[in-house]
Amino acid sequence: MLLLLALLIVLIVAGAGFAVHLLWILALVLLALWLVGFAIGRGEGAGRHRFYRW
Image 1 (cartoon, one colour):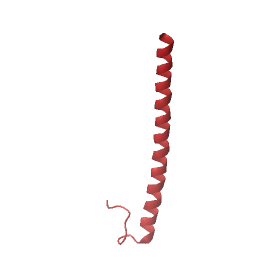
Image 2: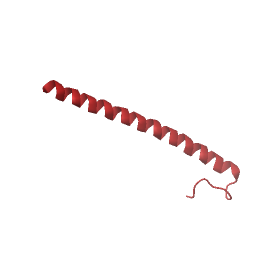
Image 3: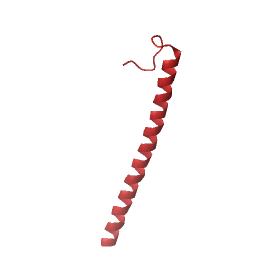
Image 4: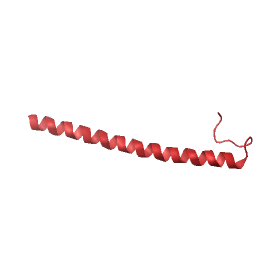
């Protein structure tokens, strides 16, 4: 029973680590897309076309 509990804890920790890793990759991809959009928005013309409104 103790061995099964230890195995379950290891599986939960490994699964959480994998999910966090995927979230980091997703965050980096979204950051890259945001930076590309920011560069495109600045290149087209400062006041006419904006990628976002801040």
